[in-house]
Image (cartoon, rainbow, N blue to C red):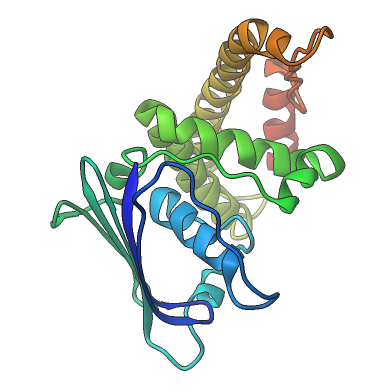
Length: 234
């Protein structure tokens, strides 16, 4: 349970210091006073991401050099700082050298209007949602996701430079690595969906007589993914 939340230069809040003494807390106020920003700050401190924007600079109060979110729970103290130099995260005053070592310790569930994009939005939104939820629970998946992004960045950069007469050896190596990592991610996403469905079988009947099942359908299968990579290299 969160016991204390401290914000510095987060969105329109210059400084806030809140204490929570009950498990259920209601935040109320006029429109535009920053109620959603308080919830966003908790999500940001837990995941190092915003549910509202991909441009993290928007989280820093205008004309300020950084933003800081501190959360004290009944078990740990979390501290996340964002500036133009990047992020700095610590747990119990011990700084984590890698953000991946920080993510997953403070777990939160966020419901927001933006969640409608899971149904109405693009497949990219649904993949990002799966990634963000599963990486909080699985360090292995977080590592795999980071590997995939790094290899993809290298491969895309190389594709812009190579010509028809160049040696494609390194490009092929990156392609194989991207394939292996991508297939592992697809399999882990499917496993995560199966796990959710197991919980739905037990929980959903408490609310409805209907049966609900999540279906995970990747954009491509293993064969299609391999063909897609090969086509890009031609």
